[in-house]
Length: 320
Image (cartoon, rainbow, N blue to C red; front, side, top):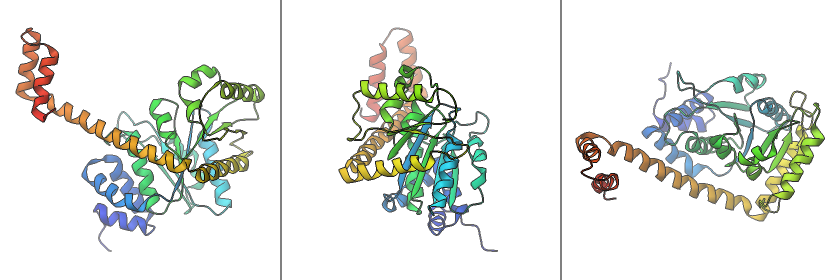
């Protein structure tokens, strides 16, 4: 038996050659952060840029995972490979991802044309908001071309991640509730396509009118694209072909207008800024330790020095 490859370079090479086990391992290294993750980032970045990403977000219970499973089935019928990143909260005990999303998509588990991965924050610098774009680039670099990023909820981090996709789909249910709250959650701003899932329930028309009213009242540019509202039933697949048609139309629109290039450029600039911010924050935490830090705290408590002067003293150590 040949030796098990272990270095990031070897694993990345194997993943590029179609080794699914190696791909799973490099994603794990990426999530953990540290120098192996940096190596993978340097290897994958030059090979990335060909994949198209679709973000799906919505409140828990809206049926995102069932809908995603139906989308996978539709794309496989079209002969397309599919990759899903299911963004889950970290377990408070193990730091790992909750596997519920993968369980709900288990019908595709034995399909070589489908790759499903749950991601958690773990120790990665910046958490999910920074780990996710790196994971997408890595998947892109190894040849995965259709990547879906499904987030578990509509908190700030989840909305931020979904909104960083090329096309963002917001999944709602009939009787979705207070539209003002949805606006506060940022859903209206990031949505390229609205989906009313579980459309076999009552309240579909009321929900459609509510969305249309919010779009009319809002002043949000969508690159000359008016977000369509699609009805789906994830459990049966009804409406999924129409949803995919709208995703394809949105892609064609933003590619031809140059908006896709602008979006991706903006995301890269924001990612760079976030990386610098996170690293400075980490450096600040490291700085606020040791004897000098303890001494300055004592001087502040005794009113010998004010807090701003104490901070200036610490920051002089790094030339800030």
